[in-house]
Image (cartoon, rainbow, N blue to C red; front, side, top):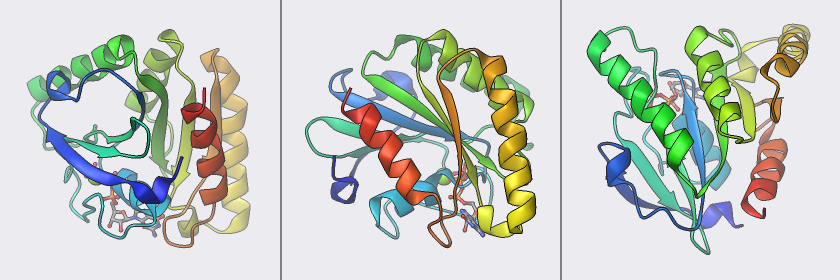
Length: 196
Ligand code: GTP
Ligand code: MG
């Protein structure tokens, strides 16, 4: 897979408007502001493929990017944004769990978390849903550049120790879109998923 060949295809308001359930897909999910869009840009080596923002809740639609040979990357809207009405939050959670359950072309779920605020309730819930659907999960601890090496390793170890509790195929890496640390790990794991 050539991640650099990524091209924007469409913005879908909900999962019913996604492209046909064919080929292979990997989705990026996480709380608002976790760094999903930035990680997609880093992975694809394109500065403005996915829109990033200092304002949480920027990505409200599902953005779809095509790679080669029917492979796709999906930028899901962030969750946990305080200003979103509760009814909309519930609707989104339901849509997300449905997507994880029903989408046949989905090969794996990347769950991005700010390394300074990892494993919030919704993050854990999302991982549980993915595991229930037999999907491999990669936890990406983003903004690793914000912590000193000691704190970074401590958080990584703490998460690593919690992962067996999910009882599924769940891995964790640290990552920074700023200094590209963790990029080879992200590339390697996604290559594996896309070649299953
Ligand atoms: P929503 O679309 O709102 O859900 O956010 P998102 O998860 O797509 O986050 P986005 O990539 O837009 O990044 C949010 C903010 O975090 C921006 O100000 C980014 O510049 C910053 N950011 C993202 N990744 C990193 C990183 O690795 N290091 C640092 N220092 N800042 C980052
Ligand atoms: Mg975004």
